[in-house]
Image (cartoon, rainbow, N blue to C red; front, side, top):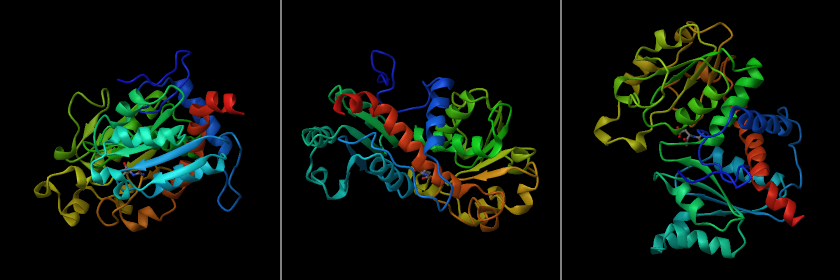
Length: 320
Ligand code: NCD
């Protein structure tokens, strides 16, 4: 595992939440709350990243994560470039690291990376200059640290705490980086009842999600929960023949209004999106009063501002 920290212990890269202490996660969330604004209000701005250049390099599709990383960096005053990897020299055979070194020559200081291959963020982190930071925006099925943080911020805003909450993560856990980062974040923040609810073929290996009860029935899985987190079937990580039919899946695992009634009356419903309405979630639930799905999106910018500011703080102090 690549070292995420500098010699003084401060965070230099963010590749996984697995190594962060509760205090570190709480301090990132406190800073994110500082950047959070109600819908319709002007967004928070600062010049904390003035003179710093951020490059977004996504080799998997993304809507929310990419746009929110870009807006977060711009609202902190950074220069931002979005490399269209499919239009870049990567398609002429240039290696990932040669692309990274090129961007370094152009004074990129922070790389935001999404990649379908395991280990790409760590490889880049191990090879960049000492002042450069690497931030994972989604690594294969392994980690999506800023998603874990924005999910935690959303629960804290709604419930005022994570300690002692009952939470169900439902769907294709086996292939989900969102579930893995949620596990790290919510365990660190004191969620004691974190249930893994999935069809047998989408259950993670026994070695993962230590200490979490597993359930294959959605109604039993969400019974009495404070938080229900729904996940998309990660079709891109399946062999075609194994992808379940949408309507069969909905019948067995879709979150409907009737099923949601088994959770607590004030339970919140989360989904990282993209949603497949009528597959893992009914529209009436996704758009209903218990849904906090849009609040999750809004929190993405606040969390990414907090993370960018924190990782780049020593560099910003030297540049300003
Ligand atoms: C997720 C992802 O890419 O891991 N989306 C996101 O970043 N909000 C979830 C998904 O694709 O299902």
